[in-house]
Amino acid sequence: MIRLEMKHTLTAGVSVPALLSIATIMFLFIVLGSGLVASPGVAVELPRTTASVSVPEHAVVVVLTRGGNVYLQGAAVSPGDFIGKLSALLKTSAERTVQLRADRRAPLQQALQLLEQARSAGATRLTIATEPTRE
Image 1 (cartoon, rainbow, N blue to C red):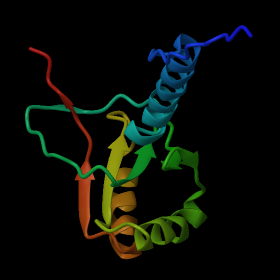
Image 2: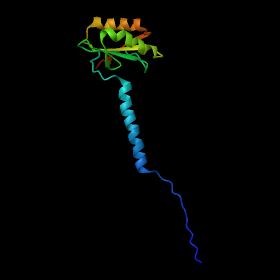
Image 3: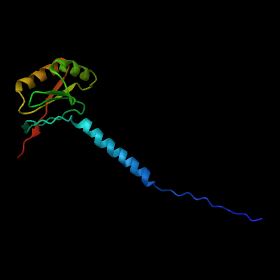
Image 4: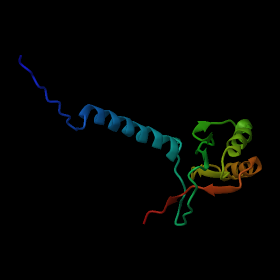
């Protein structure tokens, strides 16, 4: 009788398609996630200054455009709904910080009103976003 012996060997290696899938998913997560966290997508021209203050990562962002439109966390909000929506966001925020990103050509009076309303909505820290001066 003839006996056949089979040798089983295991080889360790990296599956290239699996590695590419993981890399693609991580890339999409980082790219799409960073856009949501960094700054809401409303373009404004910030005032310039030499002073700088660090802002907590989880600050509630209020944007005031040149035309006087107000955005809360990237979503347009009407003046009548602003305090209520901001108050709801601040209740879930541990830091209760509001960052105002006002266009430097926006009406100053409206910017001050937004800061007053933020304080009355429960904000404990108010900051105004600026850009560094160009030298």
